[in-house]
Amino acid sequence: MYFLRTLCLAVFLAICAGCRSTGTQAGAAAPTEPGQAESNVGAEQVAVAASDAEPAGGGRSFAGNDTLAGSDPAAVVVPRAADSMAGDLLPLVRGMHGGMWSAIGQSRQGRDIEATRVGTGPLRVYLVGGIHGDEPEGRGSIDCLVEALAEGSIAEMASVRIVRDANPDGSEALTRGNALDRDLNRNWPASNFSVRSGNGERPLSEPETAAIHADMELFDPRVVIVFHSARAGPFVNFDGPAGELAGAFVEAASRSESRWHLVPEMGYGTPGSLGSYVGVDGGIPILTIEFRRGQKAELVLAAAVEGVQAVIRRAAIAN
Image (tube, rainbow, N blue to C red; front, side, top):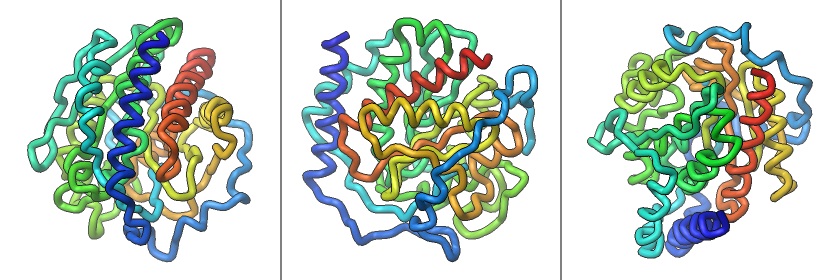
């Protein structure tokens, strides 16, 4: 276990060192919602009431829904890691858990969208390592997170379906959107979907969202977790009956960094978002985990592992 954690941290540090070595264009900002800015996420939004009841026995099944909240932080372009040490070590971590990464679809430019499954427990959790290409913090923790979820009591509590990267083209190009500059967190068949520039001409028009939607329907999750990052992070936003689970993540993540807090409302509309689709329309708890841009590698890794495990424990009890 010690060797695994050490190796995972070494990989993650190598990846982030590659990003830092090429610098960050701190002045570059991606589009925010009209009239909104990250400053909307203020201290007054932190307080959160007790959560709604968990969906066991009451929530609508995800499978078959025709109609999850995403974040719209001002984006900072973060260079892609290309560190040789990470390249040498990543193959050792990938595959340790005994599972297999497989392609559930391809991006517009033909890159695989990879997914795996760990654990054997009855609670079904769906986790997306990243959906915006210029938000790499969470994606860097995925391989080590897989290892942490594949062992011990956590593996007996939950079966976790993990998508490594929903937007591999965006990650390659360091852009928020995909190869057509479509925001994949605005392309879901939510009741509030809006046809506008960057959202796609129709829900699931993008191969990335279509592939993940099909995979998610087959898996039929009871909890969904999506990794993002924002300059105002680290915080957790949520949709659906997820207040208690969001609080569990924040409490666990705060042990490694006290800045973690809850943001129940983003302060702007999120039409066609994953949160709107799964949480608001589907009534299934979904957490939007916003790491801080440039957050230290060891803090991201600790928050991801401890936070997700805490969510699983809390949801398993409610289930």
